[in-house]
Image (tube, rainbow, N blue to C red):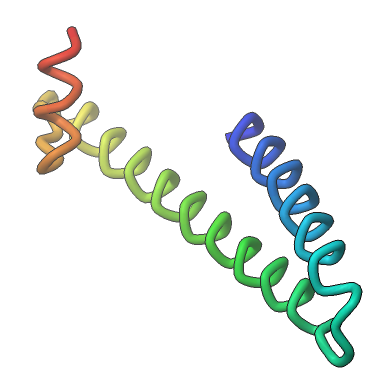
Length: 81
């Protein structure tokens, strides 16, 4: 989670910097970088929330002694092991 937040923050700042350079010459586009930064923040929040929900789901099934079957993700993990 720490690595995801760290890389997401770096990615957000790089994208906002690039967009700021591109739109610096156009009048009235200062809000574009702020909107994109906000969208990236919401996306990172969504991803973090999904990861926490999956961790709780896996914990509950582990305490029950069962294998947590997550469609798509479980098949990918099983194939790579």
